[in-house]
Image (cartoon, rainbow, N blue to C red; front, side, top):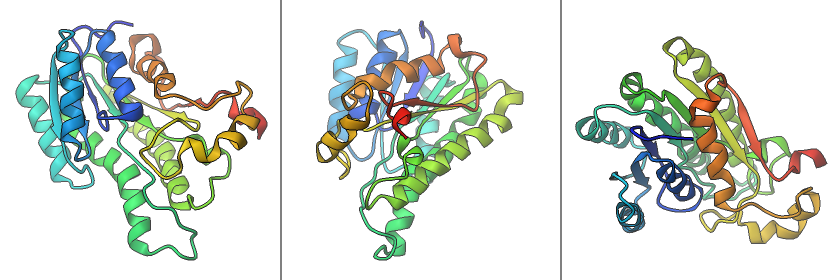
Length: 251
C-alpha cells in the first residue's frame, strides 16, 4: 500500500493506537498531520522520530470537543498542504467508569463528547479538504465493546461506540456521491494505559474467550486501518471491521 504524496491526519496520534497508525502510514510514504489531546510533548517526540526518517509532519494539539480546535486544525492543514487525503478519527477514551444509577449527567456527556462528537466535528471541518484530496477516505475508530454487551462501569463508553458505528454508516451514505469512503475499525481489548479499562484488568477473562489467545497491541490495529484507507479498499464503505483476535466467535 502506497500513500506517497498523500496527506493523512490521525487524531489522537500522540500515543497508543493512534501513534501506531501514524507510524504505519509514514512507512507507507504518507505526509502526517499529528494530533494530541493536550499532549504536546508526546506529539513533538513522534514528530521528531518521523522527521528523522524523512517524513513530512505537521503537529497539532487540543481538545477536539471544542469546535474551535477541529476548525483550527483544518485551517493549519489547508495553509500547509491545501488538501487532505485521509482522516483517521482515533482520538477517544473512556475516562469515567460508572454505573448508570450513579452516573452524573456531566460524566455521560463527557464520554459521548470525547468519543462521538469529536469525530463529527473533525469530519465536518475536514470535508472541504477531503474534497480536494485524492485518497478521499475516513476511518473512524470504534470498539468491539458494542458487540459483547459492554464492560462493567462502561455503559456510557458502550453507548458512545455504538453511536460511532451508526455515524460511520450514515456518513458513508451521505458522502458516497462525492467519492468519499467512510469506514470504521473496531478493536478488541488492546494494551493501553490511556483509559481505566486497561488490558491488565481483564487479561485472563478476555484471553479465555479469544481464539487467538491474547489481547491486542496497538500495532495490530495499524495495518487494518491503513488498508481501509487505501486504494485496495476502494469499493468498501459503510463497514465496521472488527479486529479482535476472534473474540466475537465466543459470543
